[in-house]
Every structure is written in C-alpha cells, then in structure tokens.
Length: 414
Ligand code: SAM
Image (spheres, rainbow, N blue to C red):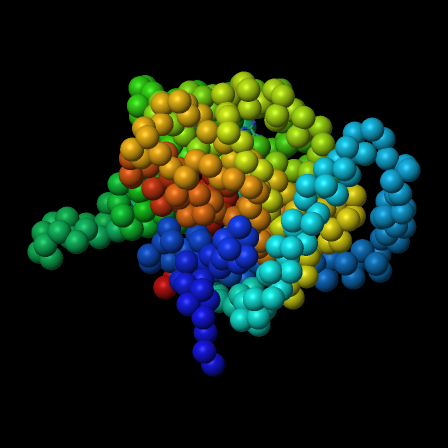
C-alpha cells in the first residue's frame, strides 16, 4: 500500500501536519525518542492510560454507583445554572474554541492512513526494563530530613577513545547529591544512573535540578546572556479534582508570580510556553497578572486536543467540566532585544491545535520540535522546562520530580 510523504515523515518525526499546518497530530513517544540512541520509550508504558480507562469505568460502574449518579447530575447542568464566571468560560468555549477544534478534529479524522495506524501506535507492546521495585516518590523523599544525604550514582558509558586506552575500558561512576544539586553531563549518549536500587536513563547532555520551588533561584544564570531561549512551564495549578491531588501537590496562583521566569530568560529574547487548564479564573490571572509580572508579550493561544486510539475525542466537546482540550499559551520575553537577523517566526498568527493521545495524568507532549522555528537566539539554543517530570537531550529540567519518567521501567533497550 502506498503511503504519503507526510505519513513517512510522521513515522520518523512523530509530527503529522494537517490542514495547512495549523493543526498537528503528534506521537509524544516519537517526539521523546529524539532524545535517545541506546534506548527508546516504551509505547505501552506511555499510553498505559488508553488500556486502563475501560477497566476503570467497569470498576466504577460495578462498585461505585453513587459517583456515577453524581456525574450524571453534573452532565445535566444547563446554561441557566451557570454562575457569571462559568458563563464567560462557556462563551469563550463557544466563540473561540469550539468551531476551531471541530474543524481540527475533522481534518484529523479525514487523514485515513493516520486513523488506520492509531491503534498500532498505542498497542505496540514491548517489554520494558526494570520495574521490579516500587516507583520512587521523589516529592516525598525530597522533603524528608534525610534529603541532603541522598546520592545518585551516574555510570558513564565506555569511552570510544582508542580501543587500547585505559579510558576505553573504564566505565566511570560518579556519585553526587540527588537533591538541590545541578546534575549535568556532557556525554552525547544516554547515561545510566542508579538510586536506591532503581535505574534511571538520563538522555544525552541533559541537566536537572530536583528541588522545591524555594530553591529555584539557584538556576538563575550568572549573566543574562547565559539565559534560556525557550522556557516551557507546566505549573501545578490548583483544581478541584481529588485525583490530581493524589498525583502531585499543587500551589496557589500567587506563588507563580514569583517564578524567576524573566531572570531565566535570555537577554536577547526568549519564547515562553505555558500549559494552562480550562478554568476561567486562570485565564484572567494569566492575562492580567502572571504574564505582566513575567514580562511576557505577543501572546498566542494554542489548544491541545486529546483523542482516543479510535480517533474520537476523549470526552464530549461541550461537556462543561470535562473538556477534552487544554490551553498552551506562547509569548515572548525581551522581545525588544531579539536580533532582527535571527528573528524567529515571531508572529504565530492565529491559534494552532496540537492533537495527541494522552499519556498518564497531566503528561504533556514534548514541545521542542514543534516550537523550533519560533525560538529566538543563535543555535544551539538553550531550553528549560519548569515543573518537569522528565528530561530531554540538551535541556535543563527543574521540578520536585524531574526524574519521574526517567525510571528504566518506561524504557526498552534498542
Ligand atoms: N509537564 C509535566 C509532565 O508532562 O509530566 C507535568 C507537570 S505537573 C502539571 C506539575 C509538577 O509540579 C508536578 O511534578 C509537581 O510535583 C510539581 N510541583 C508541585 N509543587 C512543587 C513545588 N513546590 N516545587 C517544585 N515542584 C512542584
């Protein structure tokens, strides 16, 4: 069967452009695999949510009847029941998002070769490494009194320098403090790390700092021309869902005003990408308080539309409390200093839509490749992710659990 160039390029890059590039379907597993050479992300571990959902629903139906009826009550909420803020959220949904997202979803459904391939994308079963021990809870470990004593061992791969040399046969191992410490390595290949009987895979030239928000100032570069050109931020926004509370701690909005985003930005311009949930209160906060505090201007609104392996949306588009989409806001810092020579395609024009099958709760697709043409500064650009739960080749990751998805259970060996 003949396959299109677009599909061929998707198999390689993880990006499928639809509808004149305003809409893209991405496979986050392929996007992440760019960071690895000896390992790959296991698709079945990434897409595990796609397997669980039906089981969970069955369990809920059988065991937890009251919660179902509660859900039904919510569904019945009519426009008349909405308070002022909810009304303005509904208006935003109807006027700005709805038709754009329907059009994007239609374009996605019409890409027949992609639709045929989707089930294979998630069902690709591979046996991952490790996973015998319980997953480490870095948030807990980092906040206990022993935290300063924990160390991680980095095992450097064999050097390629001359086969007879001492280095060639020497597998280096360095032990460094795990928390409140900038851990980076210059190796182009992955480095394997060990902490407390668990193995972690660190992508080439990756760097991380595992700490609480209170230590984030340690990441501020000494000189502003050493700042970051791309800053991706996925804050632990507060939201009512109990499930989220169990997954990780959240922070009140005012804390984010003090994130040193401006201080992290490169003096000659930085692109900021902020993930945002669907609450109207957040829209107002980001527009009126947060972006002005960080000095972010020229903002473009993008959408992340979540689909199931059968191509359908993960929930009804018009269901008030459970929209199948989230927001991604893009903007610039130090815009006035961006060198016109290396001016990126700053004008992102109208909204774009990123479509993907979601991984586990709150896991976002990697953005580096999608935003590449819009990052100001000379290449190689410097990129950082705040509140990260994983590492990427060449990037700096900060958060209280940036090693979370680096556990070897999420990987297969090539
Ligand atoms: N972008 C991530 C991904 O794709 O997997 C998800 C990030 S999640 C929305 C927010 C993260 O912020 C969680 O890992 C959470 O533990 C972390 N976090 C919460 N409170 C924090 C704090 N006080 N300091 C540092 N990180 C914190």
